Structure formats: structure tokens, C-alpha cells
Length: 342
Image (tube, rainbow, N blue to C red):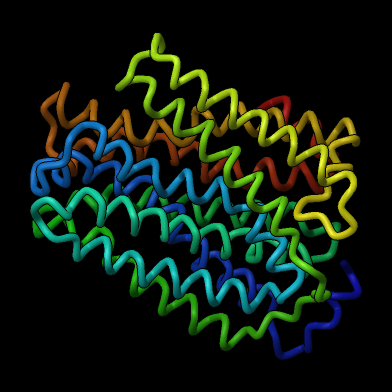
């Protein structure tokens, strides 16, 4: 890793690379909160059902989760910088199309489809951007760099609800179009920074890709539909169990694949396994809180979108500050203490 980082020419500032990657992933962070703020307005204007609104939110997250491993593998084999650029373009383009959702019978299918395409862009972009940050900074300063990466991106996420509140005074469609200037800044910074990355061409594990996408999609679909069909419906159990079986087959197959989509053997490292379990539990709360807080503020408390956005902003006041503390703690003492405290 250090050899790659030193490959950067003196004229290529590491801070410029970091800034470029922050703006690239900022769209994915902003999207998590700004769409939640606009959810009631979107539903009212487009006439979406409750299920349709949930899918407009969850289609992005489902696509992101199902294709994340694919995005990481693609970046390793094709090139991280190339995948960041492609991901930014896909994300910004699908954002424009989300904002152009027509009213009428086509609305629900349109916005859900292009929210899923947004997830594809995020899945291609995010692992590649994170890999670039890791490769650019040597080990002793990597924790601080990652703290800035997530802390500033989190700060931009906090801006999302506030910007969303003001944009909603004009039109809910603008909450998607705001991604376009962010994407243009990111692409400009990437062109200036020219981050040096290492990649190696290798065959794609399409069998593994089909299994993991199918497994995640079925499991999440079952959980999503449980509130509509009811837990007593056998189809819910069939979807969830079938999804978990496909994920199990995927894991078993990856052990025997010469060029696997995901190196599952790394989960044999106990520290890595435990920290991923911790991260899973944290993210189960981290993502839904934005949607429920914004809906609660607007519908239950009767607040305007701008005031309701403050419920989310308070969360990030702690996030941005403590990300810097955690990053420095990581550099000094390792991961255990900040993870346990967090």
C-alpha cells in the first residue's frame, strides 16, 4: 500500500485526492437524508402508495447492498479511478431522471427503477473511492484520512436535510438535481488529482454475482413486504429463507472459485469478522433513523420540512466531531478502543 501511495508524483497532493473522493461519495451520503426529508412531498405529488414510497426509498439501498461486492471486484480488476468516474456519472444521470419522474400511472415504476440505478452507481463508486483513499495514505496516517473522509462526507450529509428543506419550497424534484453540481465538482477534482491506483485484470465471477444479488434481493424483499403481506403470509418466509440459502450457496461456492467475487476466507480473521458484525448492527440503525425522523417530524409533530431536518442535523453534530477523535484514536492505539466506545 505504501508503495502505491509513494507512487503519487509530488505535484499530486494527497489532500486533493482525498477531497475528490469526498465529493464523489458525498452524493451517496446526501441522498440518504435528503430523500427522506422529501418523502411526504413525493408521495403526495406523485400519488404513490405507502408501498410505493417505501420502495422509492429502499430500491436505492437494496441495489447498493446487492451490487456492492460486484462494484468492489470490478474496481480491483478494471481500475479504481475509472470506476469512481463511471459511478459518479451513473449516479448523477439517474438522479436527473428521478427528478423527471412523470405524474400518473408510470410514476411509481419510474422512480423505483431509477432509484435502483442510483444504487448501482453508488455500488460502483463507493468501494473504489474508499480503496483510493486507503492506497493514497500510508498506514500511520490512514486513520486520520479516513476520519476526514467519513467525517466531512457525514457533514455534507447533515447539509442534505437543510438544503432539502429549502429546495422543497421550490420543488421536490430539486433534491435529486442537486447531485449534478456535486458530481461536476467531483469529476473536476478527479481530473486534477489523477489518483494513482493499482489494479489487476482477472475474470469476473458471474455465478457468484448472480447468487449474491439474488440472495440479498430476495431477503430484503421479504422483509420489505412483511408490513404489507403480513408475517403470517408463507410467501414472506419463502422469500427470506430462499435468500439466505442463496447467500449460503454463494459463500460455499466462493471457497472453491479460483477468482472469487469476494474473498470470503478473510472472515476467518476473528477481528475482521467481529468488526463487520458490529458495523452491520450499527448500520441497521444508522440508515432507517433518517427516514423515520423526517417523517415523524413532518407528520407527527406537524413541522415544516426545514424544521424537521434539524432532527437529523443534531445527529451529525456528534458524528462529524467524534469521527475525528475516533480516527486519531485508530492511528494511535488501533481499532478496538474506538469500536468499543462507539
